[in-house]
Length: 391
Image (cartoon, rainbow, N blue to C red; front, side, top):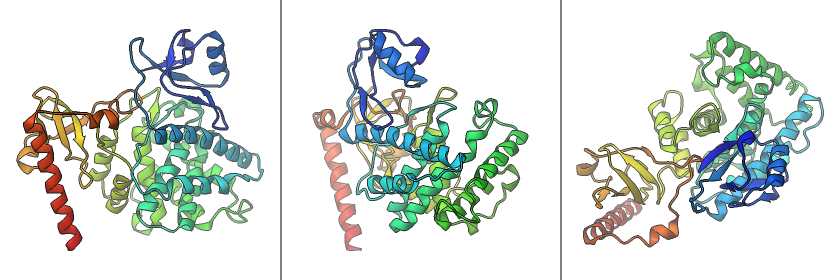
């Protein structure tokens, strides 16, 4: 899979990801072979680039849920853009509350983990896509923490608004990403504060929940370079959730200026900085998103590469992995194994999507020792679950 910028798209290329319009209607499906008219339409649509399949590359597997997720990302992004444009013009953002409710309905009540995928971002659509992603992640975290719907709606609304000011930051600063000077950081803070003033918190004409406004204020204060020693003990729980979701999204997001970190790298970073990212919030994120799912290809610390055969729900760092080089199984939950071998990172496609689907994985048949190791792992896991249930 390759990312091709718009000016480099050629006839005959095959789409690797679907393209939707602002209403979430499918324009071009995966595996569409592009012609000149298709390319003109894609360019007019304002895309900075597309993912294409390499000439001999088969269409990678994707679930119905993943397809819907990508469709909703596009649909939500345009809806949020309309809301923020209205606010900047002093008009009523009538779709803001319904949009928050829509995200809660889709992601704030899930009973399973999701495979969180990212979309490529440009300087012009970064704010919208980032805010939507943070809103979705925050809804899942909040649900995993058992929060009420009214609280989730406030958190999601705050996710839409706390980075509103980035729309006004000069392009030359935006292009730098996180590699900015203290002066530029101060400039960004001023734009964020000016954007906050557009919400008119004193009169609240847009009926934004009061706790959402409080979260936005705390997030803006946290972004100031001079507030690095901010007392986080006074933060609302929603602000802590937004902080975790914000960092995770920024680390794993796709852009032209930087390579994304994998989910496992991002979560490990959060766990290594619990003074800034509360452990209970990070653990809720881990319970919401697949970090090391079945079918994931990984790099191991011993230089080997492998395939995750069995996800470890209790500890994503220690799944059961099939070694490609030795054709043996490593049960990384076994201390005798993980003292010498650990997962370094995930082998990814360009958009972080896994190449091996669940159905293919079910057809895996290893040698006798491999099969015994998997059965042993599953038996041990069942015994642990039974003991935990009794206690």
